[in-house]
Image 1 (cartoon, one colour):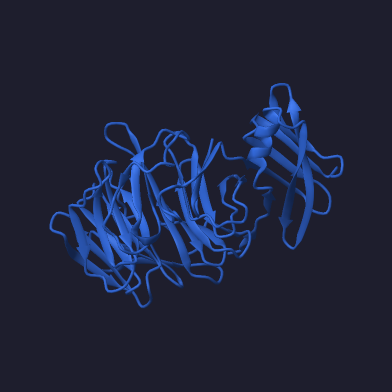
Image 2 (cartoon, rainbow, N blue to C red):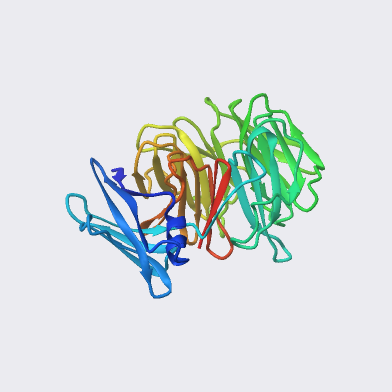
Length: 392
């Protein structure tokens, strides 16, 4: 399987402020820097931000004739084309809202879920056990101001997932515990203990009567939430680094409902949780690097590695990935797959969306991004150290 080298584009992180200043007539025009990287080449130039009617748009700067940028529906989304030694055409998304996070100093995980009542909720976890939840109303005030504090963990929160109801949270931590929280009032009716090293990932099985946790102690455990006890356990020959679960609309021998996916240094192992503990299948990454992020959507499995690789597998035929690509060797910190496409968060501050082509999610100033999700309206939320950004 050939790993494709994908290009990437870096844009001046303050481009959103520049666009707003020009739109508000604070300045007549201003240049922003742009860098394009198509291995092994890179080129650097500028784009001019100026007013056009009632909007602020980016156009080619007189000093950078090789660059071309066109606003599409709004200044928040525009197309950049580069001509010359490096040929590149990509779409750039500027954050509609970008705010400092006043709760967790370094948000590391997040989740979004629509509740049975139709209310969408958010949850963000970070360092030293900080975990908050609240209602999500697009790019408005949330989640800049914490609404509900879910207190109890004493180590960094490593995963947070909503139960299907959208009103209950499952979280895991470096403190070796998993906790069940109410997203409404922050109460913690259940704490799950038994792992002997940090819990690094979690998964909700079915309606949530059972959940799963993966740990650096080499084990994956399935828990009965009502009893608060582990009912199944698998042991790997290496630490678990990521965990996910998937189910198919129709159960088949190739795609069993209720498969657990555990990432490690060499790839992904899957177990059918309906049967006695046994491995269903395994897949190996097509390039060096261990699994650092994992997500499943229907029968598709999306894997990110600590060496910058992203690979998409079909769980019904996992021997060879459907596609695999790399942009740099920066660690993949989070991946998300849904009907709209793929989202990727990276440690070099260059998160992106992939659906056919690549859409750059700019504004992070080389700061690592740690989590990415898409809301019920198709908008993207990215969390990073001390901040979050919402892309329309």
